[in-house]
Length: 482
Image (cartoon, rainbow, N blue to C red; front, top):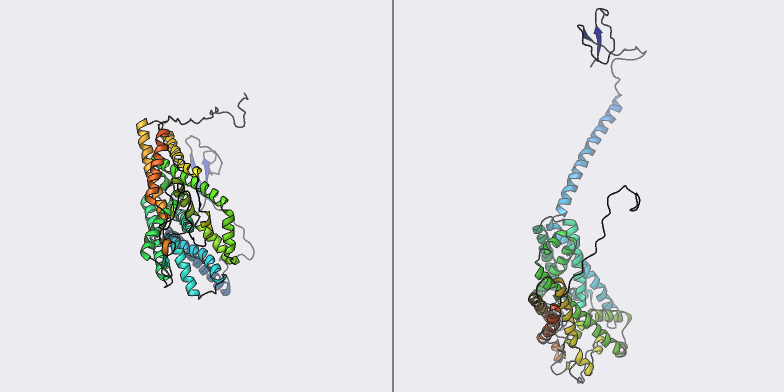
């Protein structure tokens, strides 16, 4: 396209030569424009036609263009596939089974290491590996709170410390699901939760069925119930911890319910903390007997490690027994032996050769009779929690909230004591542990006695002191600079 050159035409300039101006003039004359082209210089050897490449180079250029087109198409398809893969991976239908299978694989691997040490490193000659695999599967199912039948004898007094493994793995799986799925709606979050729990339960039931041998057996029905409860709690806490949507949903709970739940948590945590203190005193006073019993077993290195891990696994059960002891319910060791702070001398009885059982007290004195006062102390802390977080309510309302928190805490105590009772073999050990009903009743009475007076106290929440906001000034200036 040729440029236009405009010149001013007038009587003094009849040829219309281009006189360059940057502004138009208002006159009877007018503008005249010409098309011009750049000057050309003839060069020697220059041709008017573009020079064509030789046939080999043209063939290579065509191949290069084809390769570039294929590369662009491959990159486009790869991006589409990656985007589609990301959408599929974010779906709860895909992420939930991956999380559940990871929990099952890691849990089985951890317990397989412990069982392998006892299987091939013990005093007894090891059996075939299929039996070891069956034991690993049964122990993993037992870690969910499922009783096991060993050589025809039921063992329902479970090492609840093993449940730390599925609880922690499920919690981490819930947090991972939030990062992958990134739910934006509550129904997506619930669908992810239920799908992960369903897949986790199916894996536990499958292992319970496959690991069923004549020597070691677990109930698939109980495995389904226990795995569902554990999955709901562990995966649910992980989802709640990592998802702002879940926390916003739980924050909508009405204030009275939150006050009751907080008071219940304070009462239960205080009772468990006091039970840990009582157990620590009992272990410290019986440490010599525990050491002698451990040395009398003459375990190998592998057996000593397994026995120590098993003792730690039974530590939650011993804490609950300590709770039942200072509540006043006592611990039953068969039909004729009761370990209680109100029994002066416990009848001599043969216990299994398990070192932690040596911490059970054999006598009690007047100082032990004051142990139920610890329950009243826990109730007092619960009442203070109610009076603090319901300070604007009237005394009658706070008494009602404290009573509800005490009753709910007694229900939690009943569940804990029921879990710490069961069978530890045949004969008189077929039913040992605390009386759950009596312990819950004593806990409820003690908590109510301690919570009602402290809940009436006027406990005002101290307001937070806010720092004064400085006026806007120049950047970098000190408050005193003018």
